[in-house]
Length: 311
Figure 1 (tube, one colour):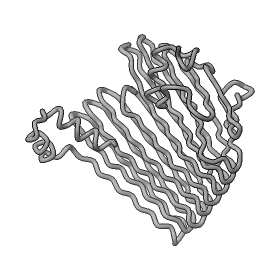
Figure 2: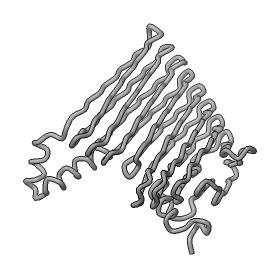
Figure 3: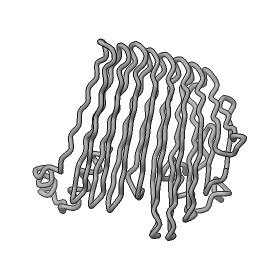
Figure 4: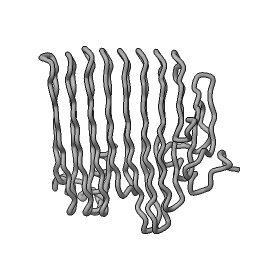
């Protein structure tokens, strides 16, 4: 019997892809399937509450909560469905938690399927969060799989947030927007991994405001664009106090793909130290030759290099 009685086999596979859920997780969780609540469990320190207007959920994490997790994945298996949710996270002072989100779409029909998720975080003083968000698409229908996530983060003094954002298969169109405001001593690390192929299009936008003294941010994007796909990377870091900011875009371009990297760093304080790095290029010929001398075909060698690059 399935660990989630209201989840069918297709949706269960999507859960495994986007949230590594093979069984009921420890801690709190909320599973949304085809626009409706499918399952929910709270813990002693983490409470998930539906918004009164039905537009999403509020997640309340008590101050001092340590080494707990909350899973909030979304799965869509109904062609033509358009889903919009607002999820708000209130992380108490001194908490230390892992939050696993993500969305998987199976589209076997001719109509587009779309999910727009707006996630807003408020981190208390000294709070620590690891946030994992994975996007995945599948299905042999002609309808597109569309994902447009928005993430807004407000970080109080000496808080820490690490964000892992992954999209490596099957999403036809995505527009990701991430905005963060950091108070004194707060630290933000963002790692994006992205793969597009076919005619897929992906846009990633980051705006980080380093408002407090000794705040810091590191935004790192690694991407691969194949076939006729297109990618746009925008990174803006505003240093409004004594702070340290760094953004980096490292991309591999293949076939007839197109990639744009658009950096912006603004120093509004004499002690703001800001750096941007960007590199776009094809796979080096010597890398392919080296692997092919070990017995791999050219296609296998390319796959090996891409997989290693996106790890």
